Amino acid sequence: MTPTGKIPYTKPFLTLDQQIALLASRGLAIPDTAFAKDCLKNIGYYRLSGYWYPMRESQLAQNQDGTDELMVTDTFRTGSGFAQIIDIYTYDKRLRILLMDLLERIEIAIRTDITLQLGQYSPWAYRDPQYFHPRFDSDILPNHSATQFAEFLNDFDTKTVPRSKAEFVKHFQEKYSDPLPIWAAVELWDFGTLATIFEGMKVQDKMAITKRYGLTKPDLLPSWIRSLAYLRNLCAHHSRVWNKPPVRQPKLPEQGKIPVLDHLHEDRYASQRLYAIIAVMRYLQQVIGPQSTWGEKLITLNDTFPVAPGIEFRHMGYPENWRELDLWRVV
Image (tube, rainbow, N blue to C red; front, top):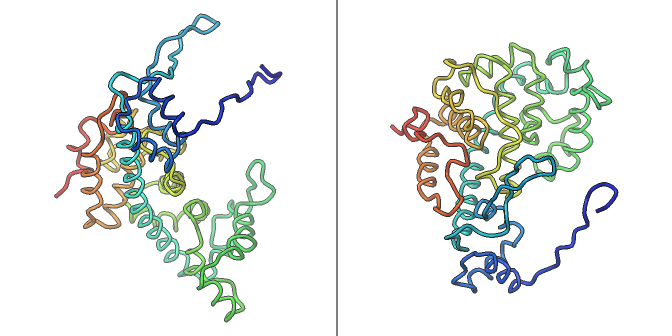
């Protein structure tokens, strides 16, 4: 034990054959070792370990203070097989692809909302503090040296634009002396930037956009955007999403304001898991593209959710009766 209380990392490098032998010794059924070796070679032991973690046995252990703690052991639950791990990995991959499809549509729609709202004042409204709430260009957040508006504009001018390889940026800069107009600049903004800009807008402008989505409070949409940004980053970096509790959860509208989301108030587990973000996405999808078949595709994908020891569909937070909810009703 080091002075900091941490221990040295001593796990050795394992060849593919050694990885398979180790998993088998811990109770994982691997009838097709060639298949397992191919998967470990192309996906990696460490990445797959996040998917088989729930399939491991757990037991109560007593801490030094006498309290009990549930400890996960190295041994796999009875009935665990390597093919089941790949099934859940494949489901998660298909889920990320489906989520990214809708996240893209939502991001583009909100970019357009902001463009239409601020662009009516000036092509360069995003660069002028008079078109934002006074606090956006006066308050300095803790651990920051400048206002949010100043930081946004500095990052955009010194990092975002110079680093962009977009052809339209190069063409514009070669032809014009002015900065990019908002309808071009917004194409370089990510979800996080959209949330920052939206939060900094004047109340009347935020409400003009908010009303499109049936929301009555201007703080809901930026909360949703930041949750979507978190999820998008997970998907973009190929991270596991199916049973990972989101770090950023969307604020919930007051009960009765958006009836199809009321069930999130009634199910605390659902409101704290991935399902809450998916429910918000489904609601936004019905506003942005009511004719879209995205909901049906998600339902079809969920029908393929694999059965395996320790692996439960509920881990994502879906309510037991989620198919019967108005939010998921297919007309």
